[in-house]
Amino acid sequence: MNTASLCGLTPRYEALQFLWQRCADDGLVVPGVPSDDFGSQEYASDSEIKSFCEINYGTNFPMLTGQAAKRDDAHRLFAWIARESGFLGQPRWNFCKYLIGSHGHSVALYSRVKAPDSAFLVEEIERQLQDG
Image 1 (spheres, one colour):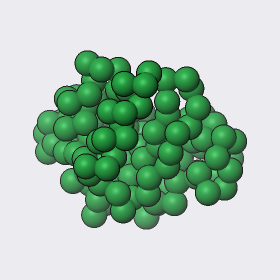
Image 2 (spheres, one colour):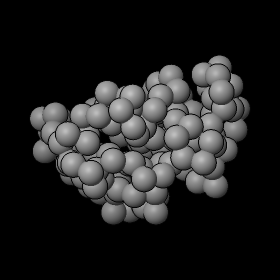
Image 3 (cartoon, helix red, strand yellow):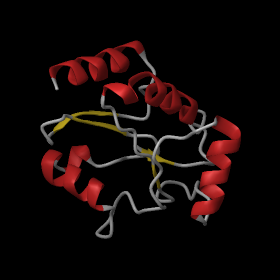
């Protein structure tokens, strides 16, 4: 998921932490990828991002360093997703979610509208983990 600490959707960090705690032992990895690409809504330094997330949302899931989520210099995860899924697979705003199966292929894209802890998404994640 591409994340941003100063976005109206920032409380989604709490939902990501919920997913991490619920499913990490089953193999789920929840990497947050901070990006300032959408509305300049991310802190400038990685230490500010980390502190903000830990203090305000108690996060302890893996957070990458600040990265581009779009453009030619996009983080290699987003570049790979764009190759796998095409234009429609690229993030359009903060908190786009990507479900990647254990087989290494993109399973689904969920827009910022879908909450990370929505029943539908949690069920899909658990199904993917069971199918392994």
